[in-house]
Length: 386
Image (cartoon, rainbow, N blue to C red):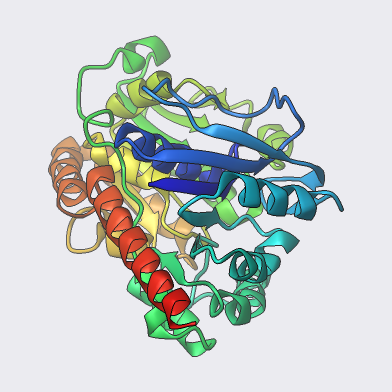
């Protein structure tokens, strides 16, 4: 099968990770992938894919601006996209939607070329919280919903996300729930030297972007208020627009280790394997791959009940925070995990088991291949009818 994948390779964000993991897995299964992404001819920023028996064919789409949140294509991007699809003749187009004006043109483009079109819509959301961040995300859903109804299939990650799209007019027949998956063979429990390296007896971890929607300051406030015992360390892995301001207020605390953005996957896995507790205090999420990676490594996880994250860790596979009360609840939980390390071990075992049951990359790709076959079959029926 030949898939034309429209996604992101930079800057680093969840969409980039998703595109990398899925396209690599498709290549490993013998499919052909043409990777179409906003990039100059050479993009020193993008994360390299691992080597495979075959490699994805890159198609660079010119842009005026791109960030982790949205992309502004250049005027030439539309023509290059259409010409590339006409030349490549893929069996199917799969767009990992990246908040770009081209997202809204894709149904029309693919209809003209008789190509079935699948989208993954992984914009973060929270149905419970009402603030500027969640309101912005709600507006994104309202803007996208009429166009998503024109895609052959839209992949989302959870039933509550489906509820939201249904209310906005996207029919059930166009929605497929395929949760994110993690490579449970790579992300697995194993010995790690990270605690010795960081001189930590107990290691807590946040890994992700340092941006307003991630609510990292609520975690840092709780860490400072909790007066954690000597030997307890909080590692912050990632970068983002709030890095300088957060370090200005909390950078002098020797128990907080600012590790920056880490591109090397094996290094990130080593950190996860040595972590006792992973904390994700976000105000909005889709389905966090960082959370799944931590769980797959057998790490006890604390996360807010936003997006699909609450579904992932419910019923004992993690600890769920109220997004309104992150700091106060962490002030209770952080000392508890220090005083009772056995709790983290029990939750970590349940977390690993939850991933193996529901969130492996193998299950994800099996479901995706089945969806591709179904979508192409329906497209063939429609074309034959004319």
